[in-house]
Image (cartoon, rainbow, N blue to C red; front, top):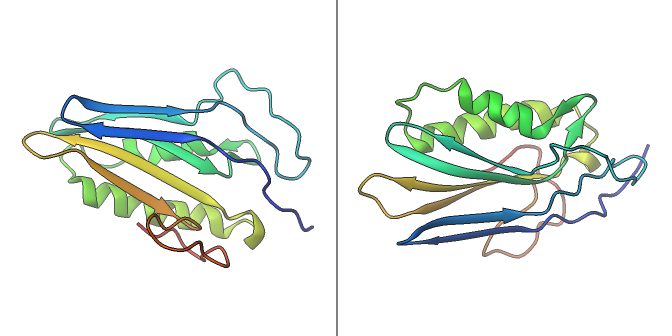
Length: 150
């Protein structure tokens, strides 16, 4: 079956000295039928808090694989990393786990971008992008990658 992703998610991340502000839309679309998925918990963002850092996590792309919601497995991966983990280690773990999940899908459905807007103690706010199809600051990719790149 061949289908193209038509829906676009709005992700806004503002990082500054006063903090991080994140916003996203709540629309979820079934990629096979192009119908809106009715889901009261359709949020494409959530917050993760650790002893030395916190992150606003948001995503765009595939929202659900079968009954497994993208936000649920992102949250599960993040909760499975030790609280003492550095942000870079967590980002790498998330990219690895996401690649594994996406490989179970047809290539044309493997579009996923995860954004972490991170605040750490005594460090400036940082933005991490993990994606199979977005490269901020670079020209668009012609094809979806086989893996999630951070």
